[in-house]
Picture 1 (spheres, helix red, strand yellow):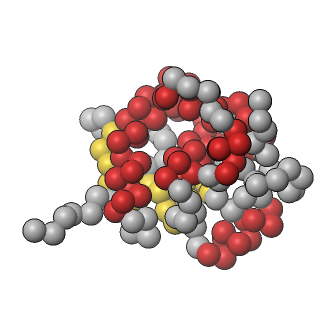
Picture 2: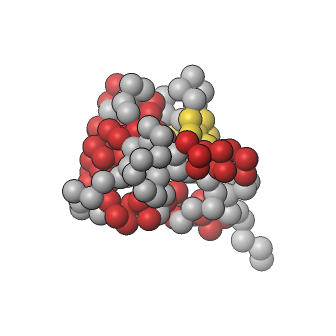
Amino acid sequence: MAKLCVRSVEIGEDFTLRFDPCFSCHQVEALAWILDSTYAALDAYASWVGNRWPNRVRCMAKADIVSGRKRGAGHGYTYLKQREIWLNPHMSELGLWLVFIHENLHHAFPDATEDELNNVHVPEVFKLVTGKKLNMDVARAHGLGPPEPGIGDRGYARSQ
């Protein structure tokens, strides 16, 4: 019997997160197990967002990834008026999760700088989910922020 590929994940009773087909079944399944606790942490950290988090994860096009590297990291983006985020599907599972958190946090803190998101907010949500401090060298290696400082206005994930 063929295994079904999960493309949507139910979070709680009234929220479903959908993934575009460019994400492999393995990628979606690798994220699915931690999404309940991730949304619980996001809700605790930014309770004013309520149930209005982005509900669709789309894939960045190759041109967006390459163009994004010129401005920053090329790992994800979002538009605040839409309930969608775009991620680079070529990242590791940890990278997908960290950038997923980062892009969702744009909706909670629309005025936050990339530096604030990468060095304050993402580490706080990571700690709420895992109970551990985020190793910024590992986070950067997996796609949180640009790989080196000084690329545009992007938030280099600093070691603390």
